[in-house]
Length: 344
Image (tube, rainbow, N blue to C red; front, top):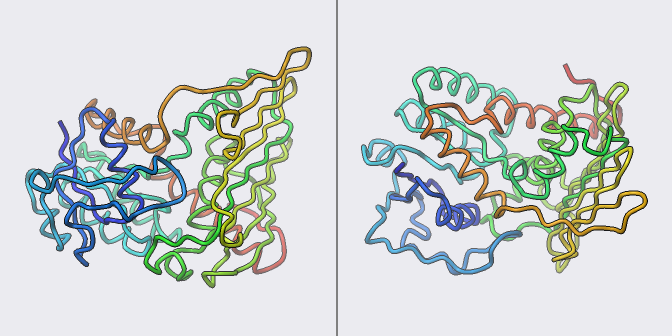
């Protein structure tokens, strides 16, 4: 059993706590929040944009409460740290946790800027040589519908991909106590929400040669709405839209359409039980229901199974986390310059 300390007590912590209930081999033994918020274990008023809506109340007689991150990292009973804090804090906490010999799961984005993400990657590479592992929590790689289409893309189950379109749009987040709406800290909708699809596109197709993006700021001062064309030489036409700019009451939606040579697969969260449909010429449309829980469960299971096996997580690596930030920064530059930006 791997004992876990979670830093942060907001929506992502709630999503992770629910996933830990379905993750064999891992046990939450400590919570940490310098402000003291929710350290009584009552998360019933904490909500977000996706996942199980049921409230969480922890039995704190079984969980230690810390307001000092250094004290948590000094606890010999804690073997892994789960970082669910604002983006601006990721670098310092991740580096300190690795130096303390703790395995690290860190929420996306890995860092606000590529240079800081690189510092985490370098420290993670050094720690991995000592058997200490870090994984960025890119949950969409583990979301059943996205994992299904990734396998179909890589295996060319229905032939080559001709085009792929991804969409992740929402009203401005209201659960971040101001952090999300400070674009210098969070990166706005581009870096905090849209990065999921940027990362998944890299997962499926690799790094594009260039990006051409349009977008605007609305709520954070950073880019809150983005539409990007990812250019692949001789490859598919790939686009993605991400937004925090929808009007209040819109809520949240995620969707994708992938057009193969011999099929089209379409996913739209808003369709509920009919969310994922497969269209193959000569056959009736099929509703697909890929197995597995949500992506939070998948990422935690992969992380802790990898640790137990003594190997670095492979579905998503520290370098992958940095690459997603790098491409999002290129999208940000493309919007600012009004032109295509080539990636190294």
